[in-house]
Length: 414
Image (cartoon, rainbow, N blue to C red):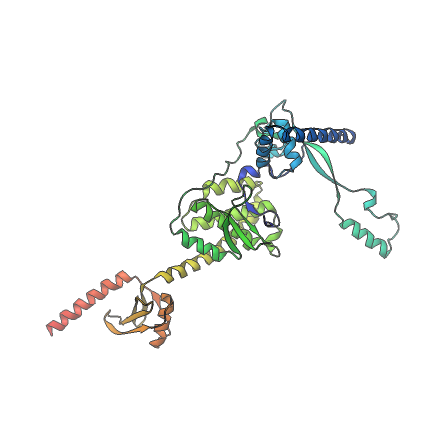
């Protein structure tokens, strides 16, 4: 499977990232006890692996892994072992509190490994604090300060949602269903707005789509509804346009990136008359921390990105519409130009005055021209370089018929 965006940018169901961090809680332990607990938990892990690989419980493990794919393999196994595979959404005590929920009295925490960065004395330069460091010592100090910290582990506790009570969580995202009018045109417009190729195909894992900077493509899960496919295309296009390496948006956090991408997808979809709120609102809520400052920062980014994609799509849709037009009427100060595509792909035109009466006719022998291109050619032939714009062909035909009737009546009278 190709490497995804630097931070795994892809559209994920809410249930797969509610447990976004393996947070610790407010139950500190002494160093000795913590060490002993890690050893105990390691033993439980080994025994759990043995039990799961030699029983029907392996199915339970795979189910847990699908729910908690952002947890490590070891912690997925520990969660499965301690809950019998019944856990659905786990988080630390403090995380549940942030969601407006409290752990029920008497509940036993689910033990997992929590990474703890640390440094030892060897990680720092051995220079006397009152002595000025030599250039070589300064170099060593700088080098050591830039080295990543070592990682140890301690036991932390998480709780399943069934062990908590309080405020309801955001609604789980449900895949959108339904067809889309003019779906091929809208899909083509999104493709043109996307800076990399868009490919439909199978995807491993729960994501509906992802942007891969390595492969320089956006991949969309095949088999989804037209509405879901189009919304996901827009979501991943935002990642490709806004969050690629080397862009200002690359520095945003994963949460901000997902909020931005889904919000833009909602706005762009709404612009074209498509309602994705059933999916977009819970998705955005699941990534949001509720921080108003964060929201306001994202809103400007969301607005600018939405404007850019809508502008690009509008241009594409206008071009697609012009390519399909078989006839049109253009108005200019001296009258009208009526165009008709004929069987061999060339264009015929007729010029009318402001009185709606015909003046002359001609043709554009070149094939493969859009209507706007044919109009430009005709204007050049006629020596007209002013502004022309399409007008209502039905109104023109009505007025032309009235003008012709009046002209014929006057001719008969005379």
